[in-house]
Amino acid sequence: MCKVRQGGTTMDRRPPISRRNLLLGAAAFGVPAALAGCGSSDTPSGGTSSGGLGTVTIGSNASDEIPKKSLETQVKAFTQGTIKINTVDHNTFQENINRYLRGTPDDVFTWFAGYRMQFFAQQGLATDISDVWREIGGDYTQAFKDQSTGTDGKQYFVPSTYYPWAVFYRKSLWEEKGYEPPATLDEFTALARRMKADGIVPIAFADKDGWPAMGTFDILNMRTNGYDFHISLMGGKESWTDPRVKQVFDTWRGLMEYHQPAALGRTWQEAGQSLAQKKTGMYVLGMFVAQQFPEADRGDLDFFTFPEINPAYGTDSIDAPIDGYMISAKAKNVDGAKALLKLLAQASSQNIATELDPGTLAASSKADTSDYSALQKRGAELVSKATHIAQFLDRDTRPDFASTVMIPSLQSFVSEPAEIDSLLVSIEKQKANIFR
Image (tube, rainbow, N blue to C red; front, side, top):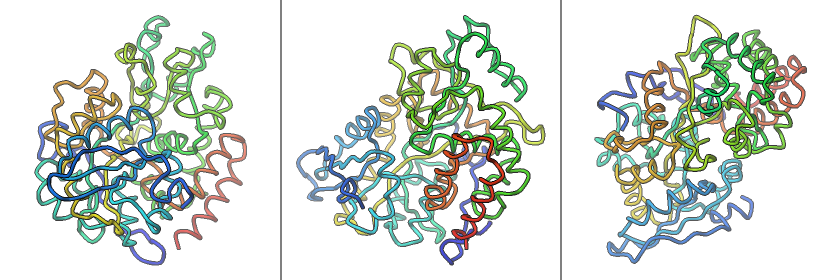
């Protein structure tokens, strides 16, 4: 198991998710004012306490309409106490999470599996929920448990849903134009060129919020240099001035002319809507892009995995982040919080999530997948066939490196794609200071 330096201490990296491990044991996939307490946008939910566990507060980043409704619906089944959801804009929540957890956090908070979970657990900002896992563990594969386990071998996270990243498109537009999913980068570029000639912006693109471009970097790096190099780079073990990294940015620069222009002024939701409106032909994003499609049009949404760049790695790796819940170390109602996590781990809760949110898949191996849409079934199949599954750039590296270095660096590249050498020197210098 490799090690990563964390603020002068050594941290075990979590084991990678492999196709075999992810399916193991299952036949199929089952602070600013805004974060002061956790938020100024309070949504009360839940009913009268029957179990005497009182009020449980949730700090939630589920600020978009569909995820917000999903969480509110799931917690209605909590009869052991009263639930209070404090919803904060997703990006604000993520950017201020460290101060929030060190201040006056809610009992439960929404967060991410893997490295980013481990980072806060190691710093004593999360509550050990190994006792919860002794009850819910049978509902998850070993791989999901691994992604919920800290470097000390204890569990700190309950997985709820996950979603793959891919290249999404509208089937009706492609059938009309005679487009076919490309298998190689050359075919992808030729297709983009053809779309441009047809008056369609080939690749929907947005990076106003800073994180969407990370997904493009991830897949280009994994396709070019492989999963192991990518994870090692995220762990601070490789140099950003390495020619292999420069090759990734050179490839990306070659694709920029096919990207939707003015990306830094556009949200991912707006880019998703352009895909829904057939103004753009493709979009590299997570399956949650389905949230931006009218319900009547969701059956027209399809995807293909990003094509091969280096035959040595083919298409063996994807991003498929896992979302879920943790209990803060400063929780005032630990018993109530643990009871709530047990509810959110149940297949019945995750069935609600996947029914309401067309862009997610249930983490529980006992969840009902029979009602999955065609898109969800395709998503589960894509993940099951992947040899390596990354969690996403800002979840596979230190939070401070992701937010203070990579967000502005990638936005700088999007703005000035010609300035690669100086950009990589800058990233490497900042990385060296952070990963000391």
